[in-house]
Amino acid sequence: MIEARQLSKRYGDMLAVDGVDFSLERGEVVGFLGPNGAGKTTTMRMLTGFLPPSEGTASIAGFDIFNDPIEARRCVGYLPESPPLYPEMSVKSYLSYVAKIKDVSRGERRQAVERSLERCGLVDVRNRVIGTLSKGYRQRVGLAQAIVHEPPVLILDEPTAGLDPLQIQEIRELIAELAAPAKGETQQTVILSTHILAEVEAICRRVILIHQGCKVVDAPLSELTAEGQSLEELFVRETMGRSSAREERA
Amino acid sequence: MRHVTDVAGRELRSLFVSPVAYAVLSLFSVLAGVFFILNVAWFNDMLLRLQQFQAFDQLEMMNLNDHLITEFYGSMSVVLMFLIPAITMGLFASEKANGTEELLLTSPLTAWDIVLGKFIGGATFVAILTGIVGLFPGILFVYGDPEVGRTLSGLLGLLLTGWVYTAMGAFASSLTRSQIVAFLIALVLMLVMLLLPAMSDLGVAAGASWVGDFFRYLSANAHVERLLRGLVETSDLVYYAVVIGTFALLTKAAVESSRWR
Ligand SMILES: Nc1ncnc2c1ncn2[C@@H]1O[C@H](COP(=O)(O)OP(=O)(O)OP(=O)(O)O)[C@@H](O)[C@H]1O
Ligand SMILES: [Mg+2]
Image (cartoon, rainbow over the protein chains, first blue to last red):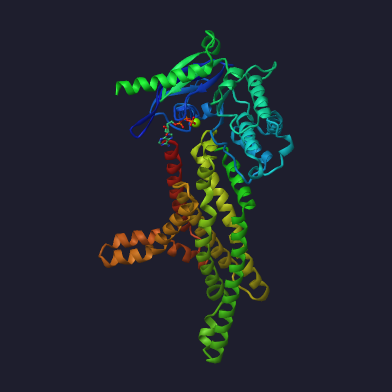
């Protein structure tokens, strides 16, 4: 459903993302890990078509981001690092606007909005102006915005940042439900970045770890934790080890 | 381009809940009222004075269209020049500052959906402002008999001028994430537009008459003058369409380049 081929992004002299390759099957939930500045946000921005890759390409649900940009974007629900909200709009009219520009047909729009309000626990604040909501609620509206058109692919950049423990629990359940839905609903493929390793252990079946723009780990979670090591140990070893190796070379 | 109306509708609704729109609307109405009263007083004064000096042939020449409505439209076009940038400065800049640019550019929208939607949102607001201007000459029809055709074609000239300013302001807003910078760029563009006749004279003085002709065609003056005289000509309408279209193209290029940076 998501395929990245040699994705690279160069900012001036710096390679923020360096030839990242991966391929996700339908229904996979993948944790996208890496230290600050590793290139997670940049990679996600390239997948969603917000940033053009300097080299390489990607395809979403079979649509190439260069050749079929509109089709590819239609298949993506995207929660950016900072939720893209209009502070002066009410929650409901905002979601209804997003549904419109994401090509949800007029007849299904109302239901789609209701459903995303419900799923993200926003029913009580549906008529509130977004600018007056707390940070956690704004994050929820951002998530609701990403799922309102029920896209086959979800790209979530730190979806649980700023949420309370209870809400984190609910969002995790929601993500699990999206990937393994009840009959008759579309199964969604999810890639989410996070710094909370427990979250990855709770909902992801596969881990991609990037460090300084390069992919260093890509394996099923079960495999990684098989030898009794924790995800945290792996993270520290992969990211610390590599950078010291780099320094030694230099 | 199926989403133009969605983008335009959201823009308008957001404008109407923002304090800027109400500040502009009320300031504009007050200024329109003040300028209208000033123009009426000036017109009255002229009549009285001409009577006093018994300048009957000049008195004969005085009419509501030339000496009141046209003057009033002229004052209002200057007011629009300063207020429209305040309306347009947020069109693109605020999307960048909010982070909502990331939503727009990752949705299945074309660049034209975004650019035309934004322009139409702003242009509708400017049409409302022009409508307010139109109310005042309406009063004159109760007490006098201005020419309907000229009054309306002059108003059309004001509307088209406003839309040119809107297109310029939208372009300015697409260049930056700061609304204040967008406001200033828009003002500079409009000042350049106003200076075109002077540049045209310079061109003629320098002996390059085609440069002079070119700048004179680019300047809105000749076009709006014909509209104020009641002449609605296709060539003038084409002029406005070309200027607005050019700025729309520039805006589209700016939006696309931000996607490809
Ligand atoms: N617009 C930009 N111009 C220049 N450099 C940039 C730009 N955006 C990101 N970078 C750089 O690219 C690198 C990767 O940044 P990115 O935001 O993708 O990291 P991240 O993995 O999402 O980090 P975090 O965990 O802090 O969110 C960083 O070194 C960052 O400074
Ligand atoms: Mg990030």
